[in-house]
Picture 1 (cartoon, rainbow, N blue to C red):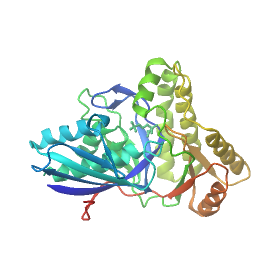
Picture 2 (picture 1 turned 90 degrees about the horizontal axis):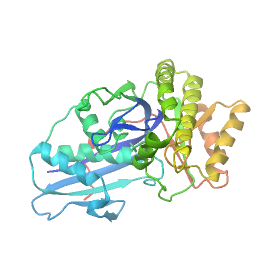
Picture 3 (picture 1 turned 90 degrees about the vertical axis):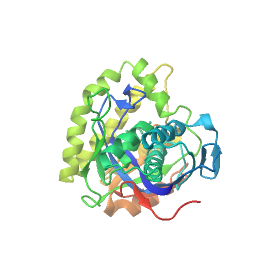
Picture 4 (picture 1 turned 180 degrees about the vertical axis):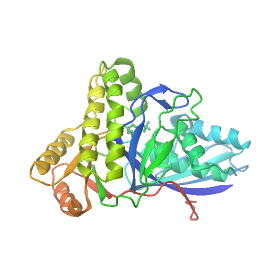
Length: 329
Ligand code: PMV
């Protein structure tokens, strides 16, 4: 009753922000992302009668029982499989957690697949995506490779709210992302609380939702046609619109740091001087720079020389969530 899974984080090009139903994690809007190789989580889960409580260790640090939503998720999987044993869960990421690099997506996707296998269940991709969604919304997209759309669905039970592949990882290998780390501190407001506050108090939330379908259409078509400008421009503007809803909540949520602004302005000036590149930012201060493979190394070098940049991680469209043989314990 032990299994290990590996999952990549994903970065949304059209963002998910706001839940229509909180307990099943059902979104108000559909979203599209790229599954990013290079931002990886490995998780081993073991159920055993020898364990006297659930144990969760992330990057060598043991988390307290009531500290993590993951505990509710393990209970859900135990119920599905009809088992009672406690679990030991060990997880390792190769990037900082809870700082806006989508660690919850790769973490919950890897955890869901490892736990399901360890519990002896066999789920298809759709079922796995639905289950991962209940752990953390954006995790449902990390189940799949390449470019992925999470269809918001209409049903109350969430059975039509899951992710599907728009294009596989080999469709557009020239599309790249440089994830920059400008702070390794935990973010002040988590995405769960942040989006609830936005839905409840931002006067711009309605306009955000009204503008989503157009963005989805442009990004979907742009990916299929490999139109970098269309995808980059739409994704960048979508990110700014999401942050505008965050900044207008009561009290306002401002995830950007001075270093974030520095990179935003840098991207815009590089673009003006003729190199195509765009930015996107999630619920944190880190900036992800979208570019083409031919410009990747020179842009990465330049970003690394900007003040306040701690580290960069270069990503290409990556694999979905998979089982691997090597366990972490
Ligand atoms: O799934 P969560 O709770 O980590 O929320 C993700 C929210 C954003 O990263 C800001 C947007 C997205 O679609 O990934």
